[in-house]
Amino acid sequence: MKRNGFTYVLVLASLCVAASACGGGGHEAQGLTPQPTIAVGVTPQGTPVALPTAVGTPIITDSLFRFPAKGYEVGIPQGWEARPNFLITGAFSSDAFFAPETGAAVQPSIAVTCEPLVEETTLQAYFETRLDLVKRLLKQEPEVRPFQVVGREAFAVQYSLLEDSPLDRTDIIFLSERCGWTISLTAPFGQRAAYQGIFDQFLASFRLLP
Image (cartoon, rainbow, N blue to C red; front, side, top):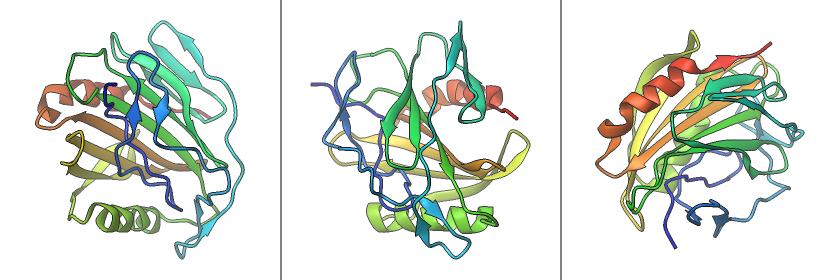
């Protein structure tokens, strides 16, 4: 059974920080059962609250992945596989995009999560909640830098997982009027640079919908 690079741990605020296994070809998640009772909204004070699940089906035309119910569209990297609603909880779902299998222990992937928020949540508060989870769950200090995506202020959180199936990961965290976003870019350990061009192209093609 091949280990996959798509990694998620759903702990209150839903930051994705620990590897899960996915079978080759079908990518069914193993070792992680969606928890419909997990609270994932975050108040301005960082308090988690239960919020409704985003539902819907994307429109996929050639390489364009358009998901009106979640409010975004993006270009699918050439040869990659889109898996909408790959991971579902009680408050939201995450879409995943997988690179072709190369025989490596970790399959490169991108995950997009739109998390509903209560009013007046700030980017700083949203980001700090997730950064705190990374530090506590990974027991390491990730590299953090300011970032921009779709013309919005964002944070890039970069770290590595060295146990089980080693990987490199960057989480892009930002807010829109609709929700808090996390775009997770995962590569086999030591191969981040090899996939950076694809990751950059994906982020450049990302658009928010009305």
